[in-house]
Length: 541
Image 1 (cartoon, rainbow, N blue to C red):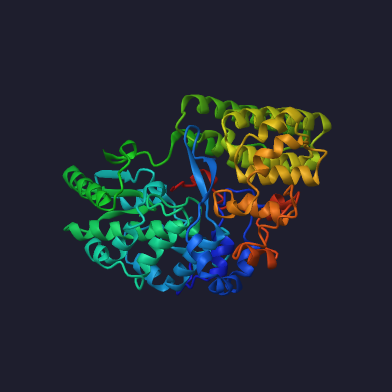
Image 2: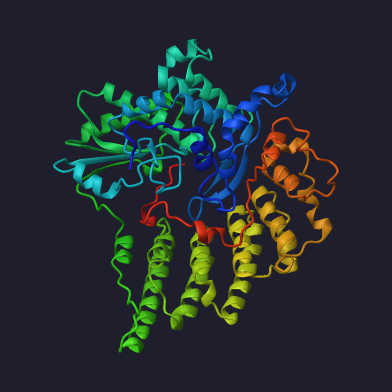
């Protein structure tokens, strides 16, 4: 539900909009959010020397699969500068919200999650159904135009933020800090070592910035046309409809020129003009969506129902693997698992189901979060034989993902190890230490410290990560590892309390702020779905 007159508060933006939702839930900013106002007030007393030395910081990056062949780096800014950026946005929220509200094309308007449904501070309208809205809006029209911005978040030019709000000419001659667009530009650059190309992927502040620019593009294209556009924009994807092909072609040229005005490029592979009607959903997904499973209940014919469900599982995954191999551009396995997770699998069929899950994981490692959930909710039903099979598969999986430097997949594998009490083989553990990733390192140290029966490291193997545990790295891309290692006593030389010596991070330590909570069942306790229709999830980075 959208609030009529919304007000965005700093504690909400920090608590629900700081860390990317793709991280393991043990990584959180709840404690920081609860003390965000106090910390903000205390940072006023930071010395001029400290401010000058640390006027910006580097962003932590965590590799995440966008699809089977491409990846993106999730960004986790340093809290010192993310607090500043978040405070600027909250202070100017009414102006930002009203500016974006002017767009008559946006279907991804800034939405405050007042009911806690999505557990984000600000999000696009996840309830908007793109496929059905296309049918409704295009009724009576003959041509469709689809286009989007290539690598949107990664190519946003931060100076274009004030261009969007005030106009390019005015913004270029008015760079003073009494304009909130200039403040946002400067603050977001300070979160990423002053880089002006790209913004961190995964934070709600970046979504807000993307919607500011998108709304400005909407206004410019509407101003240049003689007629009202039929269609909508969802983040950076445009779906427009026309009576004739010449209008579609003319609009596409103007839209691409406007993209260029903001230093953005269209995605040529996803741009097309076509005649209506079109198929509004993938036929492959439609086929899987219509598949009906046998539900096994306690009644007189239960034996037959169990056999029927077994045949259903075989038929469904046979279809899934066939489509996966023949339609490589579709997220087949992800959709299949999002459908089957709603099915209650009978104990007799559980081993077969687990076997299919492990095959899915080999084919599409990016679906490991869904696999972890499905295994986790069934963990009390798993036999020792099945657990041994999972353990063998998990160790093979980690070795393969480490070689590819896929930190997201390795981090969820480590979490699964703890969740199901699966031992990581010693030779596999040694390979894990080759990944220079703070999320993986923190999860590994947590396992080693609290569950040494599940993972064992030789001291020399940890030197790679331990070399990052120092005061200098509190402001580098390894800030999270440097901070957590200190407050959790993972630092080899514990006499060097570099966090207490840092003017900003010592404030966090005094408030006992943790960014990682070690809890075996945290994912199961706090599990939520951003959208019940996971197959409709839109990646707008």
